[in-house]
Image (cartoon, rainbow, N blue to C red; front, side, top):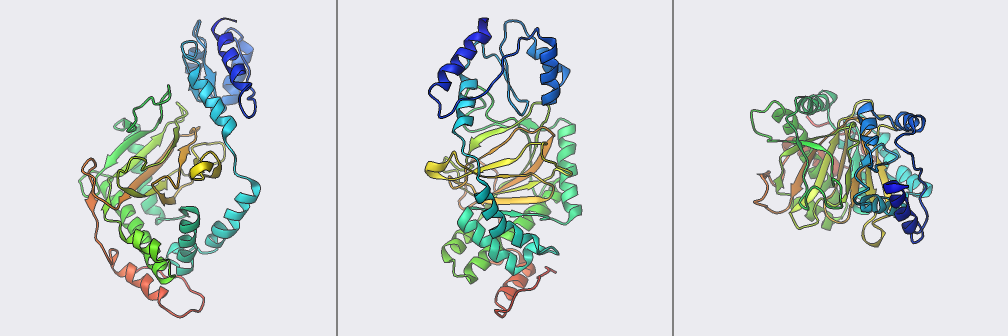
Length: 374
């Protein structure tokens, strides 16, 4: 009855038109037993309980524990959330198995400086061409990854991060579009994190140049030309998605407005991540299938994902149930005065490491061995 009954009526009206109905349960704020059960099942705090007990207020608690509040004023955000969930097409077991067998399993067999193995580069070039993204586990030497993680956590704990913002505003659909906290770090400054993220960026650029050379050697000249067009690098964006607010980032692309971004590189920094901790990066198919899920990438420690920044890779960050840390750098094929960009070297941009890979790629057609950069 009252406001909650009106919200339920809106849901039922939408259910009648939706591809499939959604299941929900209405709980009165005065039902202490049901409220306690909800808090325990969602891992929510007593502070959240007090918000749920507000008189004459209607709040939705999503499966992740994220809240949609003030629905008695406008039930639209909840209706849109539920409609979105009914329209999603999850990745099938067959599609997941194909990604595993074609790309991920072959790469897991190579470990010592493994992504410099030219055989690994060949698999990654094929994956970038066919799937528009690449995963590289154990990307940095562990001490470097730990250093980036420590800087990220320190910035968040000392409350110097700012709430993330989007070009379309912070409340594009009636509730926050993104819930992360961010800190931008220059790669050539005196900030404590500058050296750490600088080493990370150098490794990304080595990987990009390796992919370019491998694409060229494999006859994938169009991809090689695109990768060669990388000219500018953003500052590093350290982020935390707080578990307390079940922070997430709605579905979007990183270059929907022609901002010059070509490649997105994200390093995940979540030591001990387990299923249930949340914060997965959900990737979608492009075009007319952009509500069909391609993969949900687990944000495990020292995993790099590299993907095209345009509409080939729509994506969203799922709600974090444990503080989720990452470091993102964007690579541009054109200068954009709206962002503080740094020009990077062209050609043989990674020096002897790039030369070492080139030599291996140009070697005999026998099976490649590992190439360890000097």
